[in-house]
Image 1 (cartoon, rainbow, N blue to C red):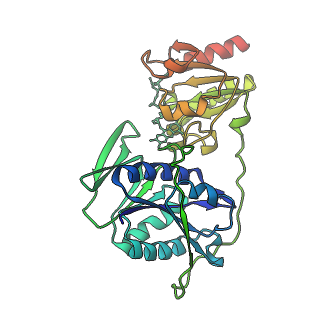
Image 2 (cartoon, rainbow, N blue to C red; image 1 turned 180 degrees about the vertical axis):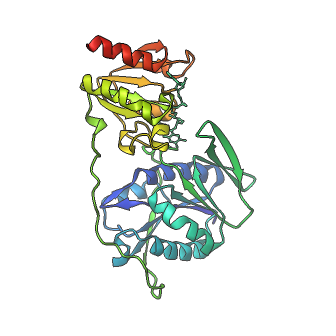
Image 3 (cartoon, rainbow, N blue to C red; image 1 turned 90 degrees about the vertical axis):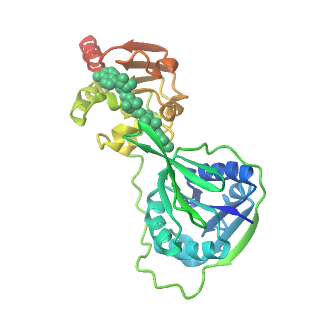
Length: 321
Ligand SMILES: Cc1cc2nc3c(=O)[nH]c(=O)nc-3n(C[C@H](O)[C@H](O)[C@H](O)COP(=O)(O)OP(=O)(O)OC[C@H]3O[C@@H](n4cnc5c(N)ncnc54)[C@H](O)[C@@H]3O)c2cc1C
């Protein structure tokens, strides 16, 4: 039976959100294509999250063994290539995460299955997958066809699909041992090092001053940070600001960043894409400043100013004295 594999990503007893997002997408595709949904879990069979995976798949292939307790890209590549050879899944969904990016290219070479990375959607027509990717800094979406093959590997960008939807399935759990005779691993798990919430934890802020791509360049962020400090708020941002390395990731609001719930949220030079808005649904009052009066942010803002954000920043600073 044709099937879709989803590689479960888990760490320290918790499933990463990306897994549930991929399971939701796989569920949707399996329903349309009458395929079987198989979650592949390496390590973690005894973890409480197994139940939540079972609700979202038709089968869980649980591969057990001491070496599988902690992520090791080489081991994942070996185990997954064996399972792919055995089961020949039509699609294998992998997170576009440090884990997925570690082993997916090697898995593609080992299995001969083409790989599409950083995809935000997967469409299937006439038995052929097409993936959707963002280009030109996220301004355009492109549909990409893959070289015809027996199966395909796709890495999925975090935040592309909802994670809270359950497909109402009931998986059979198939236990397997890590195969004997695998090549000796050149890498070994040493220890976890926590990075913490970052220098700031925006999820706890009561006032957030958020900057978007409209801020223009990294050098223009300090005056906004100064305003945030003077108002006893915190600085946050949209995703492009992080992608451009203008601010560290822990400042990012949105589906692939953090959900925030400040009493007041300033959106400065942020257009209001749904991936951003999803992160501020818990905010009290939203105040948007944007040069473009048609910017979608004005549809959700309680107060809006059509103006250059720097003029407003300076005006607020002047008011504060
Ligand atoms: C899977 C996936 C996950 C994503 N996750 C996130 C996420 O977590 N968070 C997130 O934010 N995005 C996320 N995105 C990206 C999202 O789709 C948008 O591309 C992004 O939110 C746009 O950021 P922006 O509003 O800063 O930039 P833009 O859309 O480029 O908007 C910039 C705005 O600034 C205005 N502007 C320009 N100059 C000025 C000025 N001087 N003064 C005032 N206004 C000005 C412009 O009119 C424009 O409206 C995700 C996308 C995908 C596909």
